Length: 301
Image 1 (cartoon, rainbow, N blue to C red):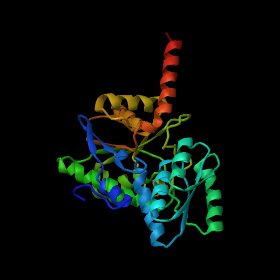
Image 2: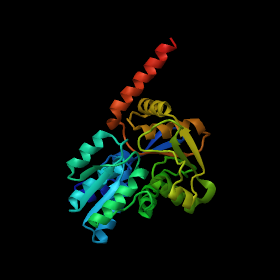
Image 3: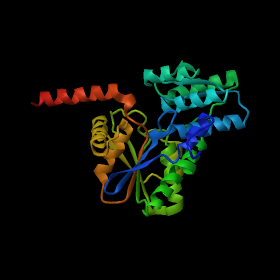
Image 4: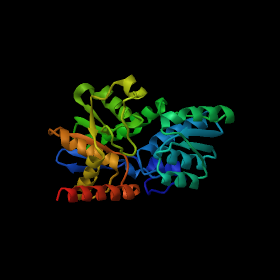
């Protein structure tokens, strides 16, 4: 709505699109996905598509395993659409998400070590309670959501300033937004757009993204990722600080990883960086990383 007055949270979510595109370097623009209003992340888009599908199919309840933002957005949307929602959080998930998801009235259960390990528990629960398991890791709606919204927005925004995208750098978790954006641009512009995926380096942990060693159904099916850049946790944190001091915005570690990858491979191509979320929820992790840097510098002093 023109005056930004909304009847419900779904209208609010869609009313925030397109999310802003901010120039952060001579040839680079950042897609600020933390302007999505529920989880303050790119995951709002996928969650909306999944929940609306459940409603179309007449489901009464949802069950999913997620380590964070998708579950938060699904919990909010389930609450306002009168769907029951149960989420299995893997052991590595932030304790804060457990609290936030419960606030929306969802049931939170303990999962196993990873979301992959937890899938069998979700399947059992789905059968026992006749719930709908959207399976964000394999559901084509995860890709479609970003083809129809995120990617289209980027294309229209860049076209509006007379620029053609030559490279997109995007972090990889479920692969939904990486593949959805990549497929849109590959379908429309072919090899004229390079799609770069960003993952944690071996032994590093970056919230929201993961290595693709075990394979990814979306990545393998569509083959739109041209190359992958590995980033350490400390490199991602340095990326966060550089973006803060250069652009005046506070981004999350996955966004910092994307920016570090950009700096590493930058060769002047017109580039769009996908910043999935902001840094406000990572203050404790930033503090730990800053302390580690200080200690490392002291040991070399």
